[in-house]
Length: 489
Ligand SMILES: [Zn+2]
Image (cartoon, rainbow, N blue to C red; front, side, top):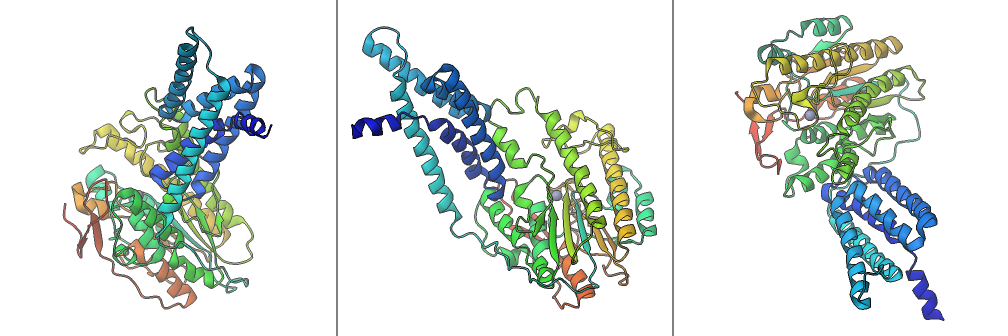
């Protein structure tokens, strides 16, 4: 009796949910985004699996409906796992057919028990590997914010990272574009331009970790792990720790972040994350091996591009909304905008565009760029500049005392084909009562200490503003090469 009862429990199909979850967690342990990025795709896939299993079980019977539900959900996200499920089903058919010496349906309850076992083993081993791989990471824990609000007259601080915005001199020499109209309008709004601003690193993750901790990567990661995925996990922890921001939080600032789609670049421990809900890069990756993939038809890419453009527009809108909302205490707002970085999705006037050479993240950007691609790149820069000026006007109108810095993390290119272009970056600063707070050669690493020292009277030391180049290729950031002067072309 007891044996039969346990046996019947084992025949309840839990594997559609487990295998669907396993596909998502399998991608998680491949790319290791921070855990927050896992929640939504995992929830959606599990919910879809449960719903489909419920509906198909009612239509076809429990065992058959469950099998078809598992196959459909798994095929949507990972065709390789779907092939395994299909093969197990085929083996089930072969097994019963050989035993009965005629073509026969599989032993459904046996098949269900076996797939349950496969599902439990898959999820179990993935959970174990998550646990083991989490040991030894640098802590991303941040101290709690004091209950009292910040100093009454402390200004709101807006730091807006425009990914890949080139410096005016290389924009002129490499793209033939004169950006002075934008810079003059920014000047009229009260922004100072750091004319020889440069980045400290040629890769975004390194710049962000260094900027948010106001320290060079060599100090933050003296013994970096091997391999780009492990290194990104470390950078992600450091980005979320954001120790330079903690100084402001301890003085009563609320830390507000507006993220890109790339989860490991997101300081997820911020007091407030303003994410309008567009797809994350991890969600693209979850879909990349299944029927929802962009390959070979590229059918999803127009949707992804529209979603990407919407996130950029939404970030500027949210910045304006923040400036206009009432707030109990001062805010340090950090927005990371994936513009004017490729893919090219905007014309000069903000209308949508599809550029064949630069369709998605796999843009063909081999230099020299064609004249038409150069023009497309410039148009996206011009539209980004329009968004910047509109947002700057709204913030300054709403609260003239606000500190506002627009800066970039590198020039047009990440790689060192042209060392000086790579490092030359943008830095425009609106710093009321503290003119020329940023010297002409400013870099991201000292942006936060310079502001806090000037406005809040802190005495944080400034970091070395050298250039560090990752030259190891796509598989690792390390070793970093140091230049005390601008790398030559
Ligand atoms: Zn970047």
